[in-house]
Length: 148
Image 1: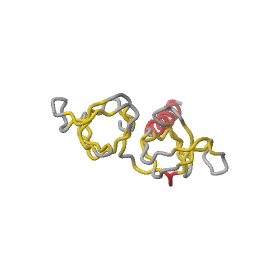
Image 2: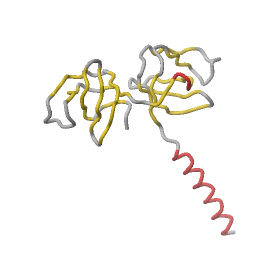
Image 3: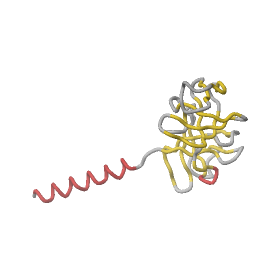
Image 4: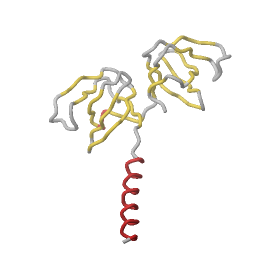
């Protein structure tokens, strides 16, 4: 009797660990025009269209070749995996200063407004080296969408 109970508990805990391993992650849009659908198939109608290349999105579910995503404005839907690639971009969630070096005591280069898209070149703890249009510098990673 005890062996059966222990066996059932092991099965329950093993399923719990499988679901705990599935974590959300970020990808970015590969093209300038990306359709977001109501469901995970081309049979579903288009919900809305993104028109911003490199926009980071968080993957919250997957089904076959489709990924359910959510963006920094909490819009969600399904995108075909061919329209996504590994993320190397972030969205600034509040006005920030771009610095020459990875220090707030370094020379400021530009002020990045809320909603600005930045391409990541390299990250170290607490700082990322990014490119924004013609500017390149370091930004603190607090309040950025697209990077854990």
